[in-house]
Amino acid sequence: MKEKPKRIVLLDSHAIIHRAYHALPDFMSSNGEPTGALYGLSNMLMKIISDLKPDYIVACYDLPQKTFRHDAYDAYKAGRAKADPALISQLISSRKIFEAFNIPIYDAPGFEADDILGTIVEQFKKDKNIEIIIASGDMDTMQLVDGKKVQVFTLKKGITDTILYDEEKVLERFNFKPEYLPDYKGLRGDPSDNIIGIKGIGEKTATTLIVEFKTIENIYKQIKRDDTVFKGLGITPRILELLKNNEEEALFSKTLATIRRDAPIDFKLP
Image (cartoon, rainbow, N blue to C red; front, side, top):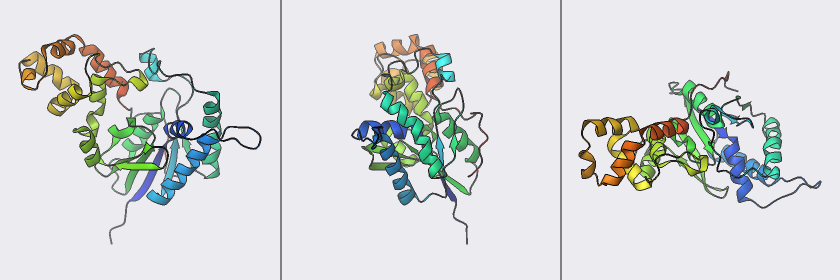
């Protein structure tokens, strides 16, 4: 009999805790410490164990200091409100939950949790005996989806309504493959991370361009070769002008949106 692949669940801990914090009431412990996000995280962990039945679980974290993205772009995530002290205290305490579950924790100075996830995915993407599910509270990790080999388990609303994205589901949602999500963000931007993209290009235009050309680099090759093609796609002269004037911004935004696969961690299956 063919051996069933081992399943590893990678937790985007920060994203899950943020989501739980904003989705749940302000629970308090008997000594007045906030616990709502910790309760939500524990619930999510139980749901992952019962629904996904993983062989391994690993928690990936952001660190409080700046990352290589901040070094490249001062305004990265600048639009975000300062985290509440109640959220910060629970982010710190959350590590105790993983210690209690005997779940190993990985982080790296200068890198985000997404980059840790990307690095682990890269390590196992050719291993037929491992399948990976990334559990997250946001959409950023969807660019790592690969067939059914790498999937993303994310929250639709609250902390109980979940959905599992394989490549087919990502295609269904965006009309293009997961690997082109950084290109899409490079055009459209991402207000949550203060990634500017090209101002004036929205969801619909960005989707049309990515469906047709796949990458930002291909768009600019076509512009330089023959820009009349764009008229046939319903791209107005104004949008074409925006594209021509903002090549550098688009490529830079794509770089910021791309998850790194080379974080300096020494990962071993727990």
